[in-house]
Image (cartoon, rainbow, N blue to C red):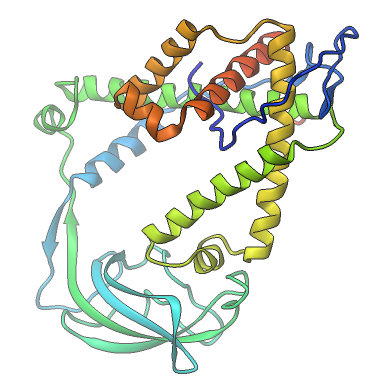
Length: 354
């Protein structure tokens, strides 16, 4: 089974004292009341339909579309535009409201829609021509970030370009130029179907892994959280979001408000709860691994690393350095134990399904 749980934590290095009592295990942090015969919802990959195959093919065709500049007329629904914009509330530019060279398909509903007496962002670009500079007014939806919800904003827009996309036809020639293995349209359809089926299988496996995690945690009593592990997980997770904010050219606070619709206080509480559950899960994992002799040898560990390296196309040393040796070992141990839990579980039909 491929990686199903991406770990953002390092387990605390506490000595584990096993207290054997049938199916119950414990240490100073947790009591695992049950881990064999856990009931989890049955998860099976859905059968791939012709419609799904066709949608995937159309998406791939669109990905190779050629841009055709529009001249001699104004922008209209369905056109693509390239724009610069700056947003203002009460005459003051706001964070996250400025962009240059932004591509947008008019009518896609990607940007702020109509609200009350105000037209949508995209609607107000229609009718303008390449080179136009103009101002529009929109109203942010009530379910937007707390500081912008319901507010009226003005945007100064520069329309750099209007273009359409020339989507190619699906031919043997296109297939040979864009497929790794297929040479004909029919072979390409089979290739896409195989890819969708593989993704569906991975999704089903991931759902089972998450279900096994949830079922185990329902049978884990937490005495206390390993604080060192919790703090480290919070720090690592927060650093990832800081890096994401830097990638977007903004601050963590602005990223949380504009992209995740939450405050930094709510975010910190979410990280704390997630880190606590993850740390408790790691303690349960170590108990089960010791009891069932699931700890991997150095050779088995290196074989697992080789699988990951192949999947991500990286060198072994580079991968270890990027992820971290301790984190990798913890990830692999989690995966091994979750696989064991799934093997020992009882799959039940989900209520409400036929």
